[in-house]
Length: 293
Image 1 (cartoon, rainbow, N blue to C red):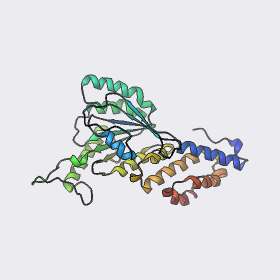
Image 2: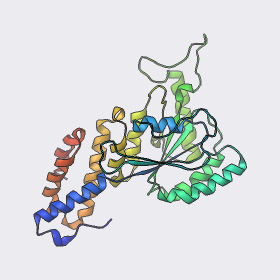
Image 3: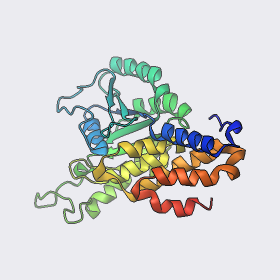
């Protein structure tokens, strides 16, 4: 990342303009999010839940996505930014198609900022997925982190009690104790299969609107600091949390601090003024902490 032009340091107005431009660049970034997962796992409906709009077509027909679908979502407020979702076809159809898709992944992952890998709660065959993750995604993990979502956990066993009644704690909108035990086993299974921390594996249910905010919080946490705000900006308003806002704004702050480099002590007061003027409401209390950093 190119540092601030030191020739501007003797002119406060130029410093302010340079910082404003840098913040605008960070907050106006258009992230590219790759969506991975086997056929029928619910990728499209999960994307729609995360971003609060119909960003991807939902179909009940198996294997409806057999080529990359790139969808650019314009920002709702008319400002710069937006979001590009790259929906990759899912492996697990046939050996011939899996080879075709493997090459497709390899050719396109370099341009991604994030991979959301969706796994169905009853999915068991990971061999092809492991190969894709280890060969293609893992070498690029610092630039393009990967988060795993175990979707449709409302269907995880046991789904019924002895009398045939559906199991789900409707009062608290969480899995029952019996289901939670299965969820934890599934998280351990995925963690072991892909050698990833359990904190990067989030159980979700779009139907029950369960853990959707937690899923987006994890996305923002895992992203490099300069890209956190862009995903927060595009998150659905219904799922946004104070934690997301603070993480996003701190990402902006940390990026600016790194960008100013050795000039930080000379410009930090201006940075505070500019950040204060642009910070989202939910992140304002973060400023009192940042001023002393």
